Image 1 (cartoon, rainbow, N blue to C red):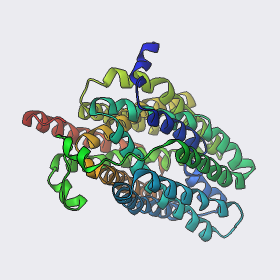
Image 2: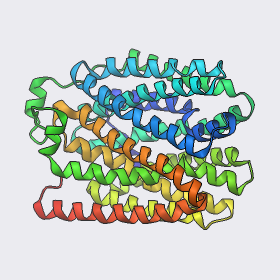
Image 3: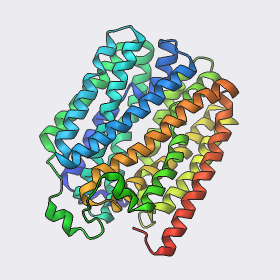
Length: 405
């Protein structure tokens, strides 16, 4: 069993430090998982208004990611991460002391913008320091670090949500600042030199703006469009699922949701290494197809289950899909990105995901108001099947062209 962990052996020191940074930061990711319940239960806002706010939150992460990607490619990964993560953390602190809901929302949205700028430099560092055949292991390890933190974080956050609400924001900020200190002390700048860019044949440097470069690589553009559908479905785990649990368990949804998020994280912790080991010889696209099937089953069954153990089973299924999605998305994007556009292509990937999240919250809020929370889950099943179909078409097209990089 322990031989499966050999996939993480021999990685550069910086990758292991990023793993620790992710553990610390995501342990304290208290606010985002409880955003929907905070806005509805504590601030008393309607589902439709909350849907709009969460949509704006998702939209704001798009320019944040684009800015983060551009600055990471131009001035460096390290400076961009430090500034963005520090600003995102500091924006949360006032939320612990003010009571005006609109001021609170404005600070939350500010934090969201700068959190969006954090992801591209992190993803670019992995692509910078690892060759293509080791990148799945690198992204997998970072993802494992995220979920080691999240396995405990939601339980603590659920307790704080119900008993010490101000500490929800202060704790989130302090853990983010701790991660920044680790980054400052131990992470070196990895931005490729011009010589490095020129030497990489499959990831050769290109000129033009990011969208011009994307248009010259249509397969990755199609991949990102399909990825929007994956995001619409996956976003329901933090938007519709807590509302469903609150409806089923009569006001006790926060604790149930926190427990399921810990099930989600524990599934990642115990299965990521095995899934990564079993699927590392497969191309990223077949892995994404399997992920879509698991989304269809895992989210689709939520509408018909009644017992909490079945909610747990559902969580395990869509979490395995999540593992495959996260560990293979970054690989596909990195392996098809010019070296001098790695962070910006990562940002466009975040844009794709955020677009799906925005659509999946704003439209779903209206959908729930009209048809009820139970109607969400048949729709997620249908959307997942559509995404699987188009991902299969992309794989078949790439296979016939002999262009599976």
